[in-house]
Length: 410
Image (tube, rainbow, N blue to C red; front, side):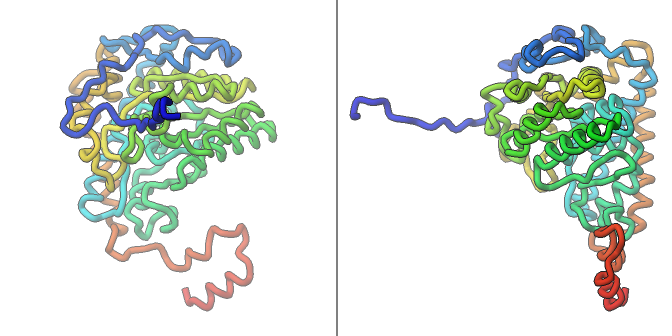
C-alpha cells in the first residue's frame, strides 16, 4: 500500500484569469468551407466527424464558401443584419435602464445575436421555440413588439405577463415562443414532448430548444436526448457554447474533455458543431436540421461555438473571473461585423447604409422605450391590476375564485 501512487483530483481551471493576456491560439478552428455536408437522411454514425469539426461558411475575406453556403438572397441577409443590429440596440438600452434602476434585471446577448436571429430566419413561423434567456433576437426577428418586451422588463401596468415572471422571461404563443423558465434545462424535455405531440397529431410543425454549455451537465439535457433519439422527435436541440456559465467556464461542464456536440453521438443523434458567430453557417445548419425533422428523420443536436461578450446578467461582474479584453481576442469575431463585411463584399451594403441602419435601430428602440416608460418603470407603483391574479389559471374560472375576487373588492 505504501508504494502505490497517491490519488489526486483534477479541478478544471480556465486558461485565462483577470490580468492575463487572452490567448486562443490553442483552439482548433477549421477553415471555412472545410466541413462536409451530408444528406438529410444520412445515418448519425455516418456523420460523427461533424461533432468534432466546425461548420463555417464565411472565410477570412467574408466570402461564403463550401458546401454549407446557403445561397441566401441579399434582401434576406440585409434583414438578418438589421435584426441583429436592432437586437443589439435593444440590449444596450435595456442594460442602461437596469443601471438606472428602472428594472431589476437584464441579460444581454451581445456577440451571440447570430444564433437566435439566423435560426429564426431558418425556422418556419409556426415552429415552437423553447428558449433559454439569451434568445431575445428570436422574438425580435418574429416581430414581437419591442414595447411589450419592455413593458415586461419594467414590470409595469402593461406587462403582458402581468407581473408573474422575471423581467426577461418572455412568453408569446402567437409568436411560437414558449414561456422561458428560470429552472435551467426544463425547456429541453418540454421541446421534445411538444415535438412528439406534433408528430402524434400528424402536424407539420417542429420544435427547437436552446440551452447553454453549463446546462448540458444537468439531467434534463440527457432525458431530452434519450426521448428525442428513441422516438425520432421532430426537434432541434441547440447548445449555445458561449464558453461561460454564470461565472464558471465551460470546462466545469466537461467542455475540455470533448465537444458538447459529441454528446449527441452516444444517443444516436446527428450532431453538428457550428461557428455561432457566422450567420450563414448557423442558418445553413438549422435549415438542414429542420428539413431532416420535417421529413421524419428525427432530431438533431447542434452546438453553436460562440462567446459571451458581456456578463452573464446585470448581477454578474465578469472582470472578477476573466480578462477584461478576452472578448476582443475571440478568434471568430463579431457576427454583426462579419455579415456586414460579406454584404459589402457583394456590393449589397455600404458603410453609410450600415450607419443609417444602426441609427434607425436606435431610434426604433428609443421610441418603444418612451412608450413603455409612460406605463411605468420599477418603483413607480404602476402595476397590473390586482384583479389579474385570479385570471389565466383555469380556462373557466371556478366558483371559489369568483367569490374570492368579489370579496377582494377588485
